[in-house]
Image (tube, rainbow, N blue to C red; front, side, top):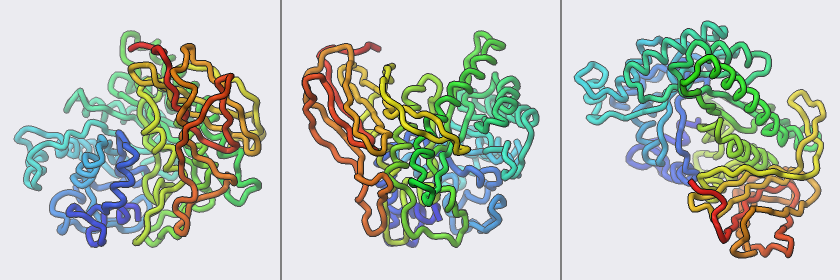
Length: 473
């Protein structure tokens, strides 16, 4: 359904490439720097050769992970063209579950080959004289999980990743290789340690996946549990970065792999449909889920030295930022923090301290934890005089008075506030009310203590200007 919602040549909204204009426009507004395809789970059994050449000659095939047949009208060339159209770099998942290293290298050669070789010439015969220049290649998806085709143990995965990455780098050492890491507490140590030790010299990223499940019918809408998700994830990032640093001691003088979250989002654990017959009938996400997304954007901003690449999962319908039917397009609440951060943040992350009270949180296992009531990250531009504070007030009932100390005088005590907030944190957009939850921007005058009040259950980005730079670069 996600493919049809984006690529549907027979739809009235489709352009000459078969893409629905309104969907492309909505995705383009997010300014995604990297888009990942095909996958997750589908990627471990995807047959790339079925998705190239004249589209009318591409037969339907079976998605071997899910067990149903799918079309191949949206293939490699279409994906790359779509990425270029929205200004994103394409990131391709190589097929590890049912595929071979030979097939993986052929795919890379098809995309990037410049010589007189069989796969580069095949691309040319399909009408693409210039190489696609795909730089990001991920080796598989979640092979540590029992649900995945091609599940392997830590050492087998590590050796396979080493050999695949070594071969990819021989084709072109400038390509970026993403290795599949594990985020599950019971497996993360053995899996990631084996992988780092075996493939250290050949990989650029250790990838991780994280979802924060919620039950909308649970007491309170699972408010505390879903908002605790990014908080728990940040502590795990610190731990896994520590593991990377540990293996770095065994490899002095060599670059460290960086961390990449190639799937992340909230997820309604009670309704996770994956079927060719399924069609969305309404939205999934509430305001509280958007707050969790805003918090994780804060996490990645604070952990920018470790996490340097991320792919929001997913774009359309199934845990997506958009709901797309035959006739409608609705921006889910979780769309808006991505939209806000893309417009109202700088390229330099600032260190800072937050002093606040705590609220009741909840672990994945539903045990009680303490959670900071306020979550903050800060960024600035290269000039260092514009500062954006990204603030989530996690408290469901109480507003907070936010006092700011930047180390430089403000140029003005009138600030711009971009805010996502509803009176009920369980509010959501819908096909009937597509704009019920959306951000608004206002000018706000700080009080004499350089403070302002933020409502409960809100995500705000506060834009300030200083008289002198906070930092230089």
